[in-house]
Image 1 (cartoon, one colour):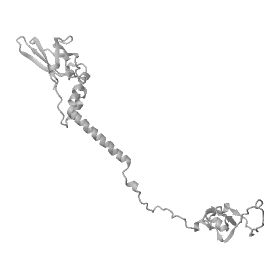
Image 2 (cartoon, rainbow, N blue to C red; image 1 turned 135 degrees about the vertical axis):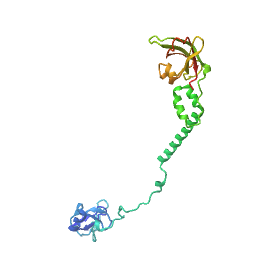
Image 3 (cartoon, rainbow, N blue to C red; image 1 turned 45 degrees about the vertical axis):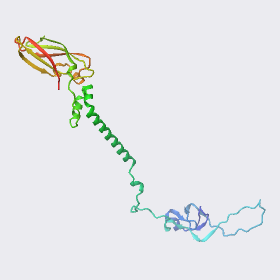
Length: 264
């Protein structure tokens, strides 16, 4: 049997044993090309030489010689060493220098952490020097600012500015529903330009001789009907009506006095 190399067109003699080896895959002994010998089988070529006959250029046809080289035999692929060594799992690959470089993602994380730390430092400085101003403008932030300033050397939050806090109207009368009880009504005005916390409401009851019978200071939560008003604070230039119910000391109390005190 004969087969032809599709690369160099060389014809080789091949045996049935060689066709069975490696599923018919052979390597050309001349050009080293690997091909399927069973796919390129051909009959035995004639060993004739082509005689040169004179012919005109127009009628001359190029004849293609079929070269049969007895010394060249198609060799099964398995008997030829591969041109490159096969890679195995034990092969050690030298690490690329690029692997040693710091990844771009890691550098980005470091930059982001640096910016976050810088922002935290700026926020801490702002809280130390201007935290009390924020608490004064927005009383709802006051509890949070006091908590944050506990471990920091913050400037102390200022107390209520009583110079701008007025009690414009007060009234004490028997309670409309309960005996031995009094109802106190008052109007508070914050004349400052900013929101201020609600003050304490001090109530003093006196007898006909001007002697003190009872006195107590009441927290804003005791005379305000809406708890959320305490968090919002007393708005500037606004009159707020408050109401307080207390126990009556009896007939011995003939007068009263209501004062505003700072809540801090």
